[in-house]
Amino acid sequence: MSKPDKSIDPRILKSAKEEFLSQGYEKASLKTICANAKVTTGALYKRYKSKEELFTAVVTPTLEALNEVADNRRINFETVTEFELIEAWNMNNDVMLWWFKFLYSHYDGFILLLSCSQGTSFSNFTHDWVEKMSIYTYEYYLEAKNRGIFTTEISKTEFHTLLSSFWTTIYEPFIHGFSWEQIENHCQIVCHFFNWYQVLGYTR
Image 1 (cartoon, helix red, strand yellow):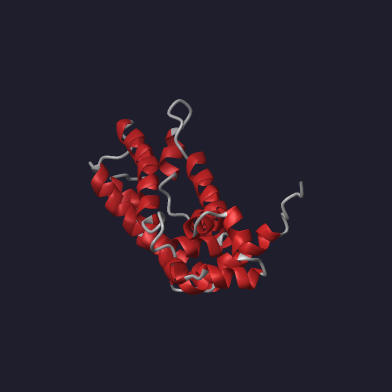
Image 2: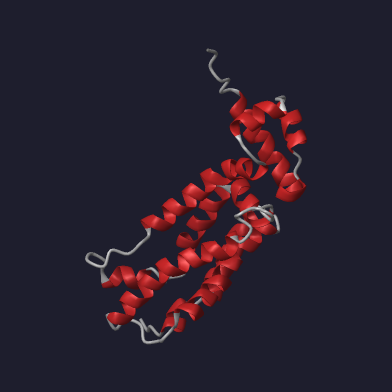
């Protein structure tokens, strides 16, 4: 029995990524993807049952990287210090720039999720990602509140609204095609714009 040609897979994924970035999911053509990858539609369908399954394969590395970062930032109530709970809300340029660098390193996948996923199960990515980060970040807030560090009462719904605003300032530079230099300048503005300490009722 002949072995499947694994050299085809990277060509399909590369071609698919380019087509999805250019046309968006809904207008993307599997015929064009196959033509540019120099494979038959039969070869594609042996590997991916549908266009959405192919799109999922293209964005999976970015999703896995995002989820790994988010999961690694979950709070350990037994070991987290008061200093860590306070510093988690410090709008430090280096910390914010880390996020932008990380997302920039996954630029194409992030753009696909933000701007090209309409018609897929990822069409609500911006909301779903904020929802996930709200759950994790709210844990930090509650622990700090319980320890008397913060004084402001904020509901989960209101917190989600605040995080939506925050993450929009991260999404938008990618959506509008900012250069890296523009993103660096934008990062400084975002750090000045958000004062979480004031919002949460903390005084140094």
